[in-house]
Length: 86
Image (cartoon, rainbow, N blue to C red; front, side):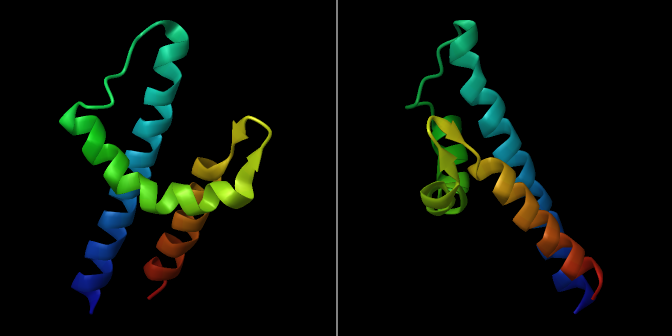
């Protein structure tokens, strides 16, 4: 059981990193750096993070501000904490 919990914690940490990278990439167009949405790495990143962020956007968007990554970080952090206590 311990190995399964460890693997889940590692996967949740990787998901947090993927969300953080996606957030940082979303800021690049404001700096004049174009992100190609057809790049395979970008597509994989979106495929990994969209199932988490898209449902949260319905409840966490205030005007033009998308707070779904923050809520996702909180939820994932809680899950890691619960799994760490096992």
